[in-house]
Amino acid sequence: MTAMFEKTMNDRSGNDRAGNDKDRFTATELAALRSDLLQGGMIDSYEAAELLQVFLMGRGYGVSPKAALDAAGRVEMAGCALPVLQYELENLALVM
Image (cartoon, rainbow, N blue to C red):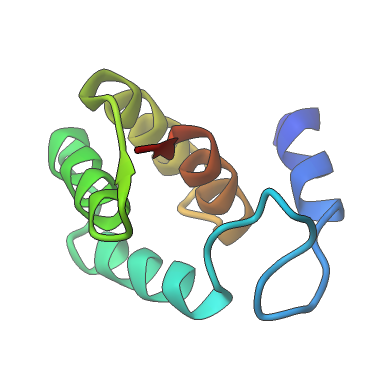
C-alpha cells in the first residue's frame, strides 16, 4: 500500500460522514457503491469507471470519463478499499 493511501486511511474518523470538510459521501453511500463494484467483480475497468461516473452524476457532480477510468484502476489495485474509493471519488467529483 502506498504512503498516500495509508495517510488517507489514517486521516478518517468514525463519523458517518468521514473526517473533514472535503468529504462529500456518507459511509453508507460508499459501502453501497463498493458492494456494487464487488458484485460486478470489477473485471472490466470501463464498467467500473462508468459506475463511478453514474454515482457522481447522480449526486450532481461532473466527472471526466478519462479520470474515472484512471480512478477505477487505482480502486481495483487497492482491492476496492473504502478509504481509497472515498479518496478517488472526492478527487473525481467536479462541482457543476
